[in-house]
Image (cartoon, rainbow, N blue to C red; front, side, top):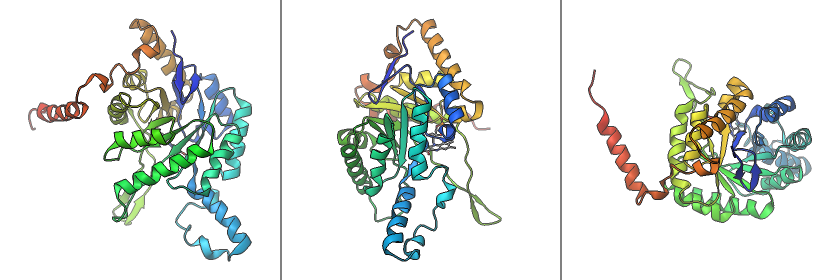
Length: 332
Ligand SMILES: Cc1cc2nc3c(=O)[nH]c(=O)nc-3n(C[C@H](O)[C@H](O)[C@H](O)COP(=O)(O)O)c2cc1C
């Protein structure tokens, strides 16, 4: 069964890969992922703030009193709290590149144009075959409009496209008011792919201590449904690659994502919980399912459940919404 997949212009043996996470922090785990059959290795993100902190520290050391920037950065994790500093990050890309034969994907996380984007070229020079850019941002300023946020992201993506020759994907959040238009602009600005979606880790509150409580919950398959909807919409509109990130735990989850149009299928929570062997199980299960259902290839299945054949996808989605609300019967 042919599982070959083109993702960000990379020819992969199949679509399954670990997503950006601590899974690539340790070379033994990276080798285990290769042995488990991962199609590519993605590193965790290097953050705009981390890079700027280092760049400002160097500038401040040369020209200014040390405290001038320290206060502004004081609410961020200290450099030592990050698993990999900027230089260590580049080194990790080199080490993974040497350790395995798989394509290595770097990840930057930030939202504004600036000197920090130099790290995209450095990650390319270190040997990455592709890059992800995670646009995680929570806008709290009422003076900042949705169009301003989108415009500044598009400017940043265009700048990035001018800096590197390797392909890159933009990892999005689902909370844009008109995602199809934004997705089109990102593709025009040079993105070779879109990753749907970021997970937002919302802090809880401790009602006794009046404190925010941060905890990281891993996903389950229920996170997938939002991704399926947007894969089905965007894959009928965009030429660029699409990857799913969020809620892929089983063979069925992977099949659904591909039917809705995913070229790449990323897994994190499932691999953190069950180890790299889960990727092998999903890959083998996917192959067996395709054989049992008499598909000739994965390509034949990809996008079969997208909205390309719906004359009015927005009306279709709204009709689904109304039908679901009307389907509930009885109150206990
Ligand atoms: C411990 C942990 C660390 C993560 N670090 C990053 C990161 O550095 N950059 C990033 O883009 N996503 C990061 N993610 C998000 C994952 O790449 C992925 O989008 C998310 O976990 C949803 O996929 P899943 O349902 O398969 O876990 C992280 C997730 C976890 C659980």
